Image 1: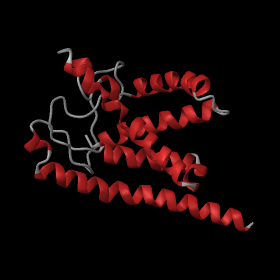
Image 2: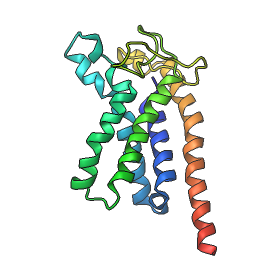
Image 3: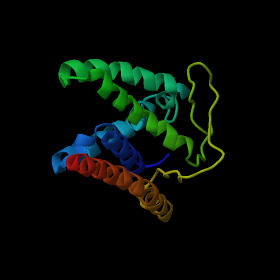
Length: 186
């Protein structure tokens, strides 16, 4: 699984492409980046649940890494967006939140997975089958002691994520800024 760096960049890119006005100022960019990191990394909150159970369904890379659970997140996001954030277009923002959450599954699908079961259960609970792309773009992040967490493998993985996803996030930002400048000229 990639780190919050890759998931955050993906979430940010989706946010600015979906809501270009957020890229127009520092506050909007920080909110978009924060939302990208928070929602884009949310599927990994299953680490907390896994800590308290031995049930395989509640372990990391299981229930929260499925398309049906992603749709559930969208359903749960709607009332939050509508009544707590009081946004004028709650369905639109709920769709964006759902897409950002789904981007987590996409990145994990293209990540080396060295632990069993290999891959992610995209269709759980409909099937227990796990899926993994035939091409690995990202390296998994090793967990364990501090020396493992801050070891050479993880540093290389983070650099790779930054080199792949950073330019994509920057390209999304520059595209939105260019579109905004072109619209201002009209």
